[in-house]
Image (cartoon, rainbow, N blue to C red; front, side):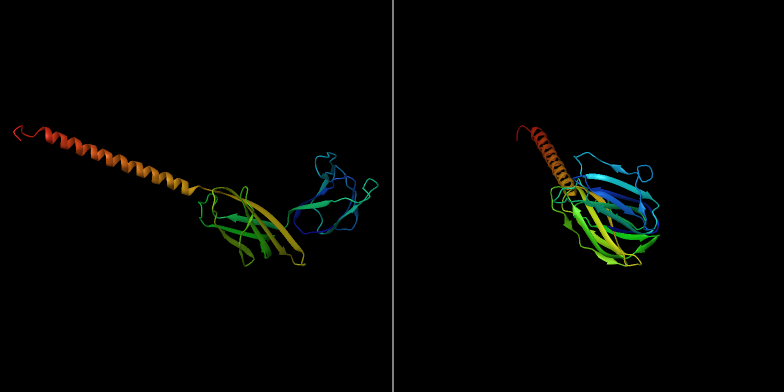
Length: 235
């Protein structure tokens, strides 16, 4: 696995998922030398708990920029049929994804503006591809249309249901040496039940009007009764 680490990356961490816990890992830094992993310098941790797929993890502070290689090899413990595995690399610093929404507590069907951009050394890195997914409980994620203007991704969303909605923002850009950079950000908005509030207001207003109507009717009846009682007996 080849990982191109750029400048200004403060931490690079790696995690191996291996259900058999039988694979061997070799890491080479940007210098090309094999790195002897240990728990003190690199925080190497080996997890023997079979209830988790995570086998081991390690990291580096202020890694040297350049190509890093992670090699996975089978051992005598590896099944003859092989095994599935996955490596996850997480980089902190360097290119960052900044995503924001204009409203955190929108009403139902109220437009919510979203902006997202990649930044490297304080400058916007033009986005080449993007994907925005809106998630709500017990629903299939909905893809949100967007536009890319001057390298910045913009979208307008409207939510039909009240409650907490998750928003996944995924952007891809290119750095100077045509290396692809992918970043993900997770946002959320709490959609307010505006229609329910309106129903309460309408219901409350109707009750008030009925009370005023019956109160006025009672006053008129009382006034008519008093006038009738004061009429001359000869009438």
